[in-house]
Amino acid sequence: MLKKLSLISKSSYRRISYPLISLMVAASLCAGTASPTQALPWRQLIFQGIQMMSISNLSDRQEVELGKQINQQLFKSGDVKLYRDRAANEYITRIGQRLVAASPRSDIPYTFQVVEDDSINAFATMGGFVYIHTGLMKAADNEAELASVVSHEIAHITERHAVKQLRRTLLAQGLATAAGVDQNVAVQLGVELALRRPKSRQAEFEADRVGIETLGRAGYAQYGAITFMEKLLRKSSPPSFLSTHPATSARISQMKQMVNPEFAYNGDGLDERRYQVIVSRLVP
Image (tube, rainbow, N blue to C red; front, side):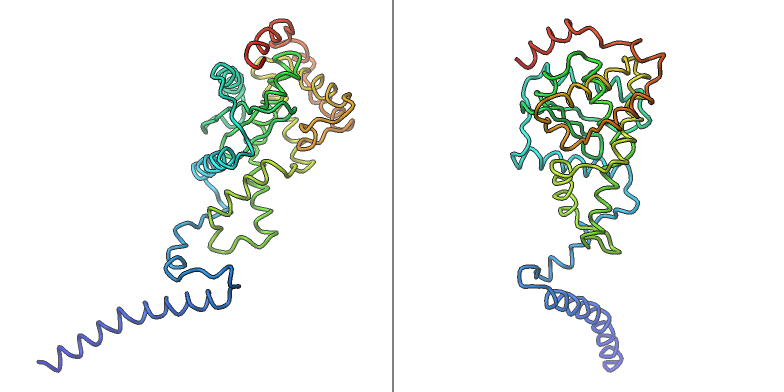
């Protein structure tokens, strides 16, 4: 009887200890092959899988959650400063939600925020986050021009351009594996892509097309997109808006072909005097 119990206890010991030993050996090998600055404690290596996320089939929910973390990091880093005027943010949000309702992807939550920055710029991150600089609000002559920029940024989200760009960059830099990518790495790269890396020419043309279509469906005069881009190109020094959204004569020419003549000047947002009164109060 005692001999039988001894055999059972040894068998149980092997079942428990062998997997644990294997796991510890694997962790030590990973730490041993990494450079000193990359080595991680074995406990952290064991639980690292919890933070891994797949980039090949990112769901809407995961994209929105990743966008939230990128948004938090943008403000936490100090690279982006939120404009605290409540009325200004509500104004942009009203325009944005009107456009979202007419967009091809209205089934995720969108967040519109005004950035306190006099430079003429706007950008978007994945998961429905759109940022409009106070300088761009001042540069627009009417609400149709402003709405055209918001619509363009929404189009980047509807077509998942940031997600595709993140995936390509992670793979090109060897930061993604079969298991996925560390979520913290994805967030940091998402911040970098949002602030300093322009999207491809193809992505910009696609955002122009989808943005102009959305602008018309939302009831805005589509030609606001053309007049705003032409005005920016005429400036003596190109604004920062063009550094992240490259605009060329060929691009504007294509935009003119995208405009539906029925909605070119037939729509809301062309009252310049009304717009100037609103903006002078919101971003003096």
